[in-house]
Length: 514
Ligand code: NAD
Image (cartoon, rainbow, N blue to C red; front, side):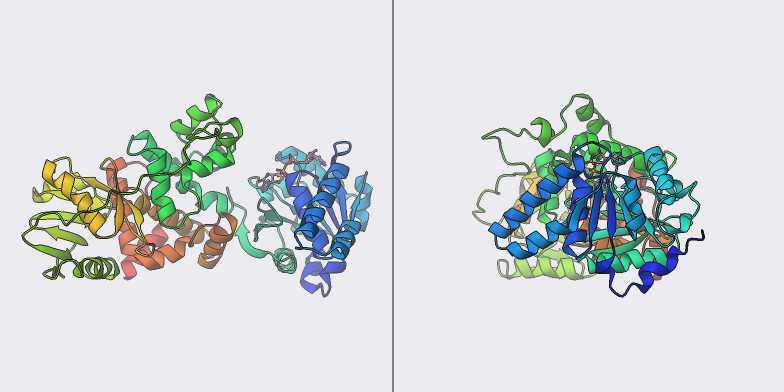
């Protein structure tokens, strides 16, 4: 028998007629069955564990009842959709399927042997898809007679709600099979993004620094989880890294980080954190155990809460005041202060962005610490984080130089308040919170693009749809510019040394072009 699966999905005129077999009826399998049935497919559901597939179907029936009660689905559509989902008790049913979607246990050997077994049953043009979140699609295909028909179709949890599907191609996946799966994902109401099978694919790879930089700052005692979460929420992330890790579970998050680290041959870029390892060792796994970074108990403080800044009674004393440099951030600072200070000056050629108060400097971070900047000029210095300048009152990290006078340490946050921020003092850490985290997210995305894992547009879509980021890494790159991002990374690299903060060659090239 010669399989020619590569023509099937690219030519499918009416994909909703095709029978789909979902193998594994756990969280993901049940969600995939729901989405496929809602798109009109006859769905067969199989699980190796007795009763598991029936249980999943019963749960889907209950889900449909709820959707009907909320008037999100008509009773008729619910009944029709449920009728399309059929529990099967043997893999022989795969003979009727045009697509088999695997969502079983995350173990290479289990997946390999399942697909090898399926190959003896399925029709010649049946496409095989795996929902693996971390295993190489190339490795799963090893041993198949027709590895070109195996593709990754990586859904996100909860499947009915999350729009992203990473369509993952292994070394032998036929491009037409990947394109067909992308087309099918669209027909199921999802947004497909093509990815090459590399550790973490797109989302689980590019998201690593979101957790890693906060964990590094915690290890350095730079700030509390609440402050770090509040700073990142302020730029639009729905959850800060600490509350998000608590939600995901530290065991799961640590194991994804560890698997990406190992799969990259222990590249220090991805090294796991001692801070998180200790939480895992101590069984403080987050929400599911009642405690992680935060305590989850009735009456406990909401994660990521920081107090409002006290009301400003007036501006701190000054003789001269000027906004340094030009550009969007400097312009916004000028606009915010000009109404309050008619004599506000401008220093367009300062070479740094921020506020000059007499001799003291309040500078937008370029990655260097306030102490480094203050040592060079021997003046009172403080740095502040990258703002979005869009929200009403933005929580913003700042840090004074170790040499700053007591008066400047007291005054710098008052100026930030006058500029409309809720300032949160950090230890004088390179790149503070937002600049450091966003730069590293951009850096990882740039490497992924250079290595052919995905396109810039694919990376942006994946991060916005797969993990609800407020913007994609290349949106941030456009906003801050490659030179600023490269400058922050260079400062981090100079501070910490080692491989972790090495700048992506793709990004260096972009910076050189500016
Ligand atoms: P789960 O534990 O909820 O469900 C797995 C199901 O597969 C179980 O019901 C189990 O009985 C069944 N199973 C195990 N071996 C089998 C076999 N050989 N044949 C048939 N059934 C078998 O797991 P899950 O969270 O649904 O994850 C399933 C897959 O999806 C994994 O590869 C996982 O990495 C991936 N994934 C999970 C998530 C998530 O957030 N949970 C997100 C994306 C991808």
